[in-house]
Structures are given as structure tokens and as C-alpha cells.
Image (cartoon, rainbow, N blue to C red; front, side, top):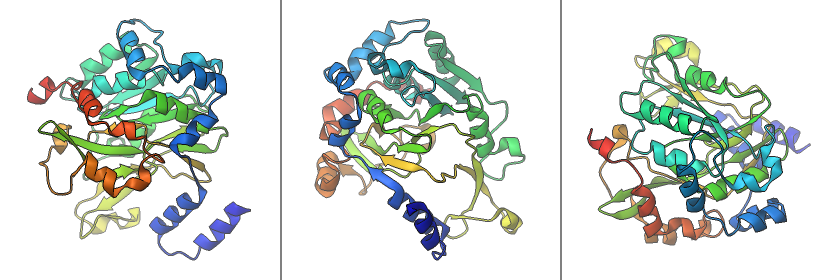
Length: 347
């Protein structure tokens, strides 16, 4: 009944963007830091509570040829290929050789298998992916055979949404997947724990990120700061299909109707996954995003960057509810940052 009432009132909202935000707000179930563990079976929580991500990462570094270890070893349900506790990592890579290996190693204690699709790499990303998948063969490399063009793409296969659908086609229908980006470092225990929120086929777990940067050995939180906008999620692969989203930068960035594309000189083609009739769980922060390490995004520090103390002061409402304050430990973030291969930045 709630669904039909919301749909009815949304009919009177002229803006598609506002309608989407209203639906997401109403149907989103907010799960705080303290509440997440209530979704775990008590015996699983007792087993994993004293284990650390670093413990598993160090063990996995010495495993070659399969059988890596993780929190999933403590719940037999996580061995079921159709369980939300055993999702496929859905990964797309383009020129990520600085952060790639560290990011992939950070998810291993939470995720048992994955598809690593890559395109147009002219750095060492392909080499890193192939070596990683050789060491952990439950992760499968897939090279997209076409060039991906964001601005004025020539053909359908050159469009980003086609690439996304192609990558997802290797994940069996009816099984779960979790979208992973490799300029993030994940807290594997928190990530794995969030998988317990999904109980039904139409459930979706939104995976928030915090944007951070390091400048002169100091950590900053950078715009758009804390992000929970259904860009990362755990979702069941029930005929998922990305659509094309066409944008024009005439004036403000706006989505345009495909029938009007001939009216614009420059069209930017992106992807969008229309999420319909989902029960959305919004959980605690599970990862840190390092957006400015990527060679194509390097920018200089400015006044919009907040120190960790400034961020904590301005966003007290997130601390202990959406963000475990231990995630904001500067020394630990710097240690994660040092895992990146900055030698590739100079090459």
C-alpha cells in the first residue's frame, strides 16, 4: 500500500530528479553503526569481532592459486553461491595502477569472487589485474574489446552503458553482486557485515563513501564529502540493465532527451541503472575514496577541503550513526595511503 501511495503523490511532482529523491528518502531504511551487528547471527559476530582486516590481508598475501581467507569462512551460509553473503565483486578499471592492488587486497576478506573488467588501459593496470587473478582465480579478468568514449561516442559499443552491461553479463542471473571501485580502500569487516542487511530479492544495500585526500602528510575530507547516493550497492542480478544517460554541459549539466541530441554540439554519454521498487538499506561507512590520486583527476588543495577535525565538528550528526569515528583516525588513513604504488604516478 505504501508503494502505491508514494507513486500516486509522485505523479504530481514535475521534476524527475526530485521524484527520484523523494522515493529514495521514503523507502530507504537507515541503519546506524550500532544496529548493523544486530543483523549478524550472534555466533558469527562472536567469531569475527576480534579479527582484523590486516590479519586476513597478511594471510592472503601468501596464498597463491586460490582459497583466500576472510570473514565469510565463519558462516557456512556465505558459501552458498546464491546468498547475498557471497556476492560477485563487480569491478570496472581504467588506468588505476596506483591504487588498484591495494584496493583489491582490501576487499578480499569480505568477497570471495569477482569480475574485473577493464578498458583502454595504457598504464600497468592490465598487468596488475592479470597477476591478481592468477593469484586469486575466483576473480576473473575481462578485457572490453572496444574503446569507451564519453564525449560524442561513435557507436553503441563505444558507450559507457554498453561497457557496464557487458561487464555485468559475466555474472550469473539470480546471484548477488556488489559494485566495487578501485580508487577506494574498504573496511572488509564492515563491508561483509553490511551484506547481512539484504534478506529479500528486492533488497538493495547502499554503500556510502567518504572522499579523502592527503596533502603534505595531512588528511583532508574533500567535496562532496560523505556520499550515499545509490552509486555503490549490493544488489541481486535480476536482469539488471544499465541505460544511457545523455548529458550536455550547455549552461548547467543537464540530462537531455535522446530525441533532442541533434540539438547539441557536444553530448556526454554516461550510464544509469534505474532502481525500481527496491527496499533500500543505507548502512554505515565502509570505505574511503581517494578521488584525486587518479592521474586524470589531480587537483590542488583549496579552501573547500576540511581537516578531519573540521569535518568532525561540522558533521557531528554522522559520527557514531553513519561513521564509526575510528574510520577517521588520521594515522590509520595515512597508513592506507602509503599502500598505494606511487612509483606508477611518476611513470
